[in-house]
Each structure stands twice: as C-alpha cells, then as structure tokens.
Image (cartoon, rainbow, N blue to C red; front, side, top):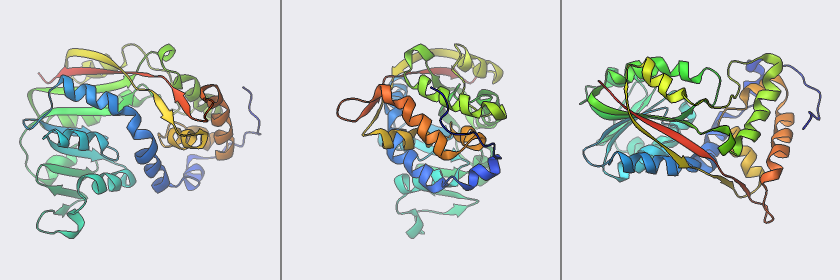
Length: 295
C-alpha cells in the first residue's frame, strides 16, 4: 500500500491541536478497551482475585479492569496521568463521589470511596495521598512492546509501585503476542510507515519475545509463570475500527508526521482485508502476560 496523499511534516504540538483528548478517551472507553477483557479475566482467574486482594493498577485508563476486579470483591487503586481517561474511570467506579461528601474526598486529584481510589498522576502520588496497607497485586495492562521505548519508560513507575507492594506480591506485565499471531500487527505497521520521516521514538514496533521478561529483570522481580490469551479485535464497522485504533495513541506520531486525514485513509485501507460481508471488522490477536513476584 502506497501513500495516497503528500506528506506534510508537522510538530507534535501541532498534531495535538488536531486531536480531541476527550473524544479519544471516550472512544477508548466505548470501543477499544473491551477488546482486552479476555486478558483481564484470565489474569484475575489465575491469581484468584477476590476480597483478599489489594490491587494497584498502573495506567488504569478508563477503569474497566479495575471495575472487573472490584466486582470480584477486591479493593482497587488506579493510577493514570491522562485526566480525560481518569474522568471516565471516575464515572464507572465512583459515580456518586462528586455529589456525596460523606463518602468521598478529593486530595491532589484523588477520589476515594471504601475500597476504591483513583489517583491522577504517578504511582508515587498514591503514598503521598494517604497511608495504605501493602498491595498484593500490581497490574500493568497497557501492553508493553507496542511503542518504541515503552518498556524502558515503565521502569520508574514500577520502582515507585513496588515500594507500595508487600513481599511476595504479584506483578502482572502484559504485551502483544508474536506478530504472526496478531492480525492487528499488519494494521499497526501503518503507524511506523507514516511516522518514519520523523523517526519518532513513540512509533509502533512489533513485540519481541522477551519484552516482559526484560522489564521484570530490570525491576528485580522474580518470574512466576506466564500465559497467552486470545483477544480478537471486533468492530461494528470500518469507522468504529478506525476510531478505536486511533484511541490507543499508537498513531499519534504518524499524525504528527503527516496529516490526520491521511492516517485515517491509510488505516481504513489497511483494515479492508479484515472486513466481513456484513461490514463488521474482525482481527484475531494473541496477548501475553507475565506474572512476577516481589522478592
């Protein structure tokens, strides 16, 4: 597939002006996030998440994984630096917090109710807000091995989170499976191709076999098992698929390097092989997870 529009190089700041963060967060919440539900369920089932679990979710996004853990009886704390996604997480997990001062409090961007906390910022901000018992489970459900440099960027977050976890606590890292088993990989390559003129450090790259193990090793964690989960991406139509994939942020570097309309066009073209006769889009994928333990 060749570019159909002339590339016009733009700065990331100019690109940001053309992206509506609230709309992106809503698209993630309503379209894309549900694709990872099989991954969340597999992890929670394996680790027997329940009332005895104190979970810290890094990059909790719009809170679907936290909601599923809370439904099992777990006490959950979510941390995210994206205010638009976190606002949607509050709608899901703390729907009455804003209007009931006896059940909730707000401190430095944090909202809490019994058993549930959402922190706007970084893992280190959790301890700054209030003292808490040690966490028994730390999750990183944002897939490692999706953007160049994303695993290295996780090191600081994990270091801060592990100070809040108890001895023997489980840490779950997740990532894409082998590219040959992920149909979406061929679509995501569009992001790399279009971002190439800027050689962006935040463009997509295929997952490597030892991505998760390398992160665990740098964090000083002890691997304790892994698994693979089928997470097909299914969309009601082409437009929904484009919006869902754009909401991941993987294509932001491509938008900065070229033009939003060109990215939309080439992304739609890359999705055509996965369209069914009824207009739906279906792409089989496999995701990995690694369970490691705090020494």
